[in-house]
Amino acid sequence: MQIRKILIVSVLTFMSFAAYGQDAEPAPEDSRWSGNALLGYVATAGNTENKSVNFEFGAKYDLEHWHHALQGRFFSASANDDSTAENYRLGWSSKYDFNEFNYGVGRLDWKRDRFSSYEYQRFATFGYGRRIINSNRQELDAEIGAGWTQSEEIGGNEISEAVLRIYGEYDLNITDTSKFSQTVGVTSGRSNTYTEAVSSLRASVYGALGLTVSYTFQNNTDVVPGLEKTDTISAIGFDYEF
Image (cartoon, rainbow, N blue to C red; front, side, top):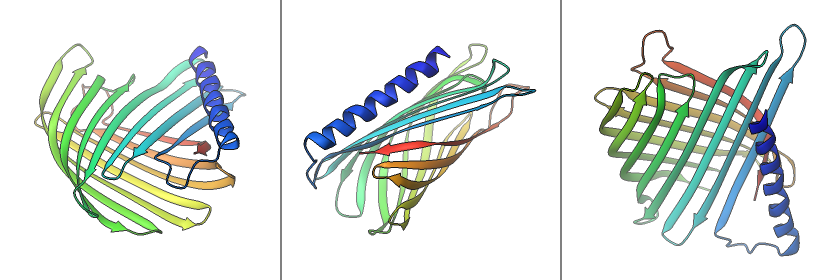
């Protein structure tokens, strides 16, 4: 409960500063900064009390050739005050444009799922990206690269190995006030292949405020006995973009 209070206060503070900045001095059209923050909370009561909280944030900094992005996510769920899910994710990426369609990319990712087979998973990869579609209505990027992963299984077994990574991202502006996004990433090593796919649909509510529904699919091919290989997260929340 304390974590949820901190998250709620944090996102409200973030939105207040962002709104103040927009009111005090409108950002120029070529502003290098952009980002978003999302907060969702669901509670049911009756024979069974269920609660879930979902907090996500993202920030981007764009230069002429360099593009940097930071993303984070926290998801928690409980039933009758017993935790049933707790998922953390933090990622950083830097891209360098060779030309309009080709770029180099480096990524750092950290993931922790309290109820999965791994205490944590870390990935560091570098590769090549291609903008297959790049229009005002839709964008499609594809990447391939290699790198290294470090992880720790439940029980203390540590894994460190080289990995191959493929990644795709698709964005579609359905209308002026709604958009669909899909990302798929596969990171494969000798002992495990980790796959994550995120589908989201956002509709503007008022100005920069929108409503977002998302579905996340996560799969590890190698897990300890007794645990599922696949986890899914269905979430809904209010999203603020700047």
